[in-house]
Image 1 (tube, helix red, strand yellow):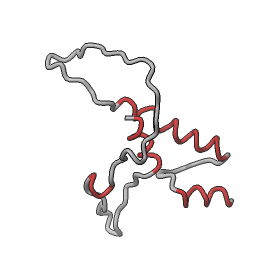
Image 2: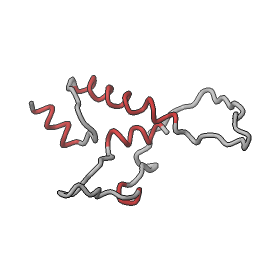
Image 3: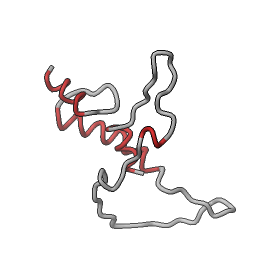
Length: 100
């Protein structure tokens, strides 16, 4: 989930043609983060709570995306001393802010 949140900040972008038609229609068009983009994190505690649902279904990490977006965004701002105002935060976008 955390990697997906970071991916939303760094790579994912809603693109449209001149008529407002979406250019990205599937995950295959956009791509998803892979092991090559992953970072290593040590997990020290894992808690498993029983599912409140009758089926026993549980999430697969969606909650990690919630904090990852603002944390990544703010970390880039603090590291570079710039104010970001859009995503994705591409290298070209970062260089344009640094040059100002």
